[in-house]
Amino acid sequence: MPELAVLLALGAAAAWAVGMTVAKPAVRAMDLVTYTAFRWILVASLALGYGLLTGSLAFPGWRVLSLAVLAGVLDCGLGGLLYMSAMQRTSAHKATTLSSTAPLWGVLGAVFVLAEPLLWQTFVSAALVVVGAAFLTERRRLDPTESRWGGTLALLTGLLWGFAETVPAKLALTAGMTPVTMLTVFAASGAASAVVLSPLLRRRTPRRVTRRGFALAILSGVAGAFLGWLLWLYALQQAPASLVSPIRGSTLFFALLYSMIFLGERPRARAWIGIALVASGVVLVSFLP
Image (tube, rainbow, N blue to C red):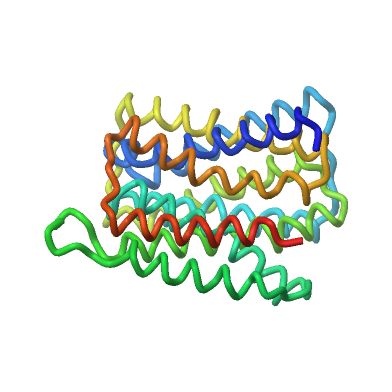
């Protein structure tokens, strides 16, 4: 595998982990609806500008466009809101670990929706993730700040992310949509879905905006989403996807590292067991042939 592709893929994983970790302090400085909508509006604007400068935007047809919209609504809109909600209810290391099960759900989506072969590794990965999730989602009686729903929401986030990135996204790219067009429509759809859902969420989530919140949203949008996706697309140009895709699993480890360094979190022994089991499942499913 070309060394440049490895570095680009690792850079993408490190960038995505920034967005996952920043979410924890961000929900304290800005409400999750405004944060999600602003973040993806920023990413869509950057992707559109990049596409115009490089001449890489192209209209693929309404059917293909609808697939990209579906991916954006599920991943950026619903998935983003669920992840932010999980961050409000549980620790960053728990939310990032459970949401990082996305590769597993992506494989299952490919098997049952795209009719790709079902391998034995999938069953082992599923077992590891389920057992690991049980360790991570159990509520500790001594910690009243955590909610049992935090782990569940993070797990649902991983499911949405995995499905959206695998099924509608793969169908759209296979049908001829360019990656930059995909990213632009993807991000714009996520922002639009957050705006559409905002009236339903405002009663429980009143608007709360601060300068710190905007700063974190910009950091997450530029480094965590836009830069991460660009690095990933460039990595795919340098080497086959089957070779660079296992590196995607390193996002989990970058996120855990950031949460310990910048958020001061220290996972307990039980959490480390859960993290190890889930990470093993993610690594195994990432190396599927």
